[in-house]
Amino acid sequence: MATEIRSVYHPEITGYEEVNRDALRILNKPGPGYLVLLGVSVFFVLLALVAFLVQVVYGLGFAGLTNPVGWGTFITTFVFWVGIGHAGTLISAILFLFRAPWRQSIYRLAEAMTVFAVLTAGLFPIIHIGRPWFFYWLLPLPSQRGIWPNPRSPLVWDVFAVTTYLTVSSVFFYIGLIPDIAAARDRATVPWRKKAYSALSLGWRGTDREWKNFTRAYLFLAALATPLVLSVHSVVSWDFAVSIVPGWHTTVFAPYFVAGAILSGVAMVVSIAIPVRKIFRYEAYLTLLHFDRLAKLLLLTSLIVGYAYAMEYFIAWYSGELFERDVFWDRVTGEYWWAGWSMITFNAIIPQLLWFKKIRMNMNAFFLISILVNIGMWYERFVIIVPTLARSFEPWVFLNYHMSLTEAAIMMGSFGWFFMWFLLFLRFLPSLSIAEIKEVLPPPMKHHHSASHTANADGAVLVEELPTGYKEWESR
Image 1 (cartoon, rainbow, N blue to C red):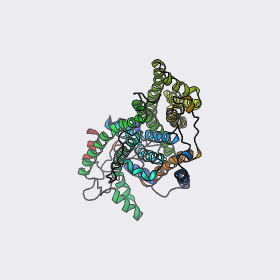
Image 2: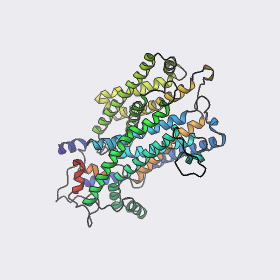
Image 3: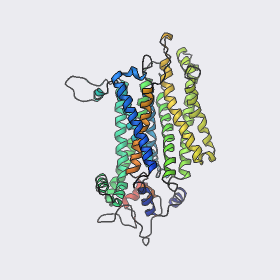
Image 4: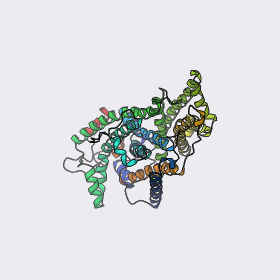
């Protein structure tokens, strides 16, 4: 079975040395295209910073937020980024626990995406509170003034959920990087890089004891991170579900939000992995079969989300509740009909093309579908928040909300912030899991003298063998 898996998922890789060379090649001097992308990302970050400073001076009203639409683009984008951050844990932790053999090449990109997406989402509660210099009031810090966080406030729930998920995801991401950082350390020629990698690798030598401790720690963190996938976005959904606003007060929001988060996260993984595969020539590592598995996962979550859409409208009609029925009817026929139909089309209808293998194996078509799903998932959060608030109980408070330039600049800056960190990750850390890819390759014979994963020194791994502890990776 092991030989079969190796031949299917990585048929073009010839040996360990090739994995080392390909995975660490992009850590060298960047090309002009990379610098252009990084410059564009930094530009949008600076644009958002200027817009944020203007908002601080003139207030949230300058950003277009008013009564009754107190939650606009900021909270929409916050929920969007929290959802994006779920696919990394799904692909890495859950598939690791289930021993899915196709996760090895894709999970490092997904984990990095998770950390940077949650890091981006964490900015929006601070942006939205109006007086960001008092953000520490949301933390349970000792205070002589007796100012404590209000545990009944959804804003406090978000802070605890995001910080917990960010902490666990970051530790999980870093632990998995340690063996690969050691490989980068052994090949680094620039002195400052060698010092930095030496510090980050924590003196890793690849001994049997280190591999045993590594696999146990990774397994523990995978088991810890898995329930967070379900709990964090459930907490975010309760921001809406605990209110009495029609369209929000429903028990389906927790599983509905989790399914939507996985859908948007998988779509973002595909949107990132396909360009990385093309630009850095990773066709031997990110094969068509990897994307076929991702396409099936995206199709599955799209079906779940489409079912949730249908049930929302059915329950609104079946309940006979006038306000509930009007809210859902307004989403597809009212002022924001274009967002409602875009949400349904991009998230529930277009992904059905993935039933066809030719579409799943066509990278251009799959990339386009993933982009449309990301757009549709942003519209989903917009439709949940803005039309519901704009059409309140009383007609004289109805309001047609329009995104302001300040909100648009900050939203675009969030994408710049995310891609800035992701591009820096590609530049300074291994984007492929060298250790796990080697696990599914045929081990080199003793007479081959292929290069090992880490340098061969006292207590290090032998060149021709994998460590005993590493073999326990699949058996535990």
